[in-house]
Image 1 (cartoon, rainbow, N blue to C red):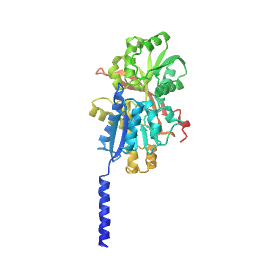
Image 2: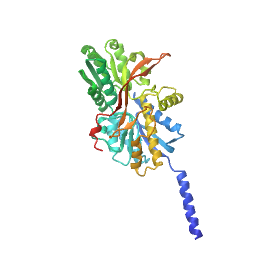
Image 3: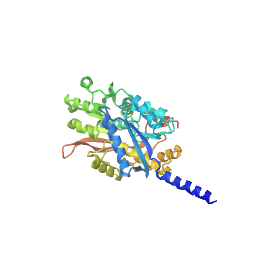
Image 4: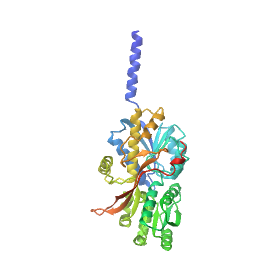
Length: 388
């Protein structure tokens, strides 16, 4: 009898010891850290890591390990990284993809496995509509959202015709579709450029010849820097105003573009000046750690980490059954830096959307300032097409 009791006690002690040294939950981050768009992935990663560091290496009190690899903006590389994280490292939570072409190559295949993907940026329409999945959550937006708010604003501003410009890939088409959904004037031209293009002389010449009342463009990262500089050098910024989503006017782009972007209105669901406690502490902490003002991408990385933390806390870090974890994610029980945040039926955000204006600060730098809220609790256009 004593022997039996001793064995049981030993097993119990061993179990406690094993629980105490349980491996952290692994989170696979596939993101873009190279090419001229590499800073976008850096921002997402830095925002996400800040949340982990603020919780002492945990999210929701659960120890986590963030695995980060660069997809180089290449879909095939993203697929390889995802498979390696899943099979070799045993990750069940994934995030980080910047570009929609990479997301469309990686996410549909990945979410058919026993894993959850949370988007900290790319939000292609297919994944919001008939290609949605109960294992896929967009914490950022649906691609069209930040253009829809600009379309409404440009209509309200009275511009009777607009010239459209975007790269030829899924997000480019989504963004222009979003603008057109809420703009009620004439489209002078709808032009799609090469992804990663650096020289926009031909496009600028075509804009000059067309003489539109305004230009709306979606050119994220280095593409936006080049276009804005060349547009200003051509003198068109003085006669034909440009508008766009936040992706072409983030803080790091403005640092490179400078006065060429002054006064430009752009659409966003977040700005560093939003007045809520979660955002105030996030911006202060990010500036203190990294020495720069966070971008939209950093805010999305941070919110994604906080959401994951709420889910892990709800299940005690146990991902053996993902259903309770996904239910906790759907509840969105976390303090978003955006303020109002909830998930729709397709697990995409229901959130407020704003128009921002590029302004110059007293120290001579350029930044965004919230101008007005245009949409409250906005739902994306594809939610009704999601069958799950």
